Length: 355
Image 1 (cartoon, rainbow, N blue to C red):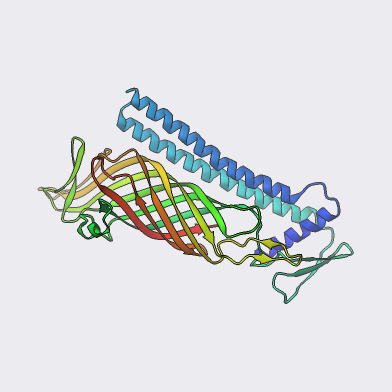
Image 2: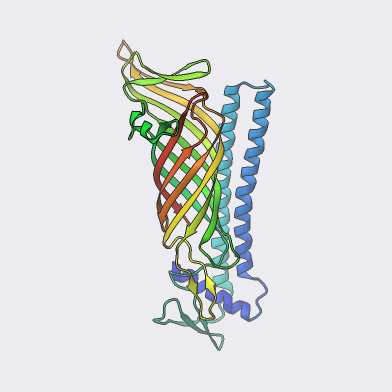
């Protein structure tokens, strides 16, 4: 598949050299910009809706529970819109490639890949051309790229910024976990090839906390505490769903490619990467799940929706170290988990940045 794509790009270059009216590269760039605009537009729509919903809640036009439900519905809707529209644009790109292959190849080129890495010689249209970009290690000079991000790991709390307090945590180590799913953009800081980038985007986060010793969360006004449940619970879990905007400064140590004319071009996500930065966002939904058998022996599943005195807004610091697309990621909320406490959420997990 990769060789086929490279061959199509080679044929494209030949066509441009012979005065073809339609530029394949411009069409590809146009679709790429459409994808970026689509993601940004849906994020903007979501932000406007959330702002309006919050304004309705502040004006007592709707209840807090109604506002939370509307926010979650809006976030789900626009996430689905992004997926649907981007999938359609990718299909449009595949169609464009097929059309070029069928309409612009006047003769079947004879090609020979030389032992030199990345060099391909093509004989077509009574001329000979050499190219250095058709191989699995092709160097891309595009300044901004995009990635689909998936992160999974363990989730817990630290009190008063003291790492030692982790040993006294009332939440299970392996039972508490988190998911983060989102879309990121990676922009080179300099115009020319370098190793410094800014990585930014938007993500949905599911933070889960499972108390130890048969405990569950109980609200007393503006305080949330852990108490022992009167029944033996099979499940006791607090889930906090957020939308965050992370931004990281990244050093990508992938070796740049030097072309025959001495031009340096980027190759990203091919070696070790280090990122450090932070994030800010807002709470979409919070609920507690408690499952147990009652005195009559029946299974009871409770799902209690409330804010549990968790703040509506969050912010924190995060970092990662990765090799190619796989890495280790950690994030730490600087905003307290529960209002009026010094308890803060901390997470560490495995990160996948999929180009």
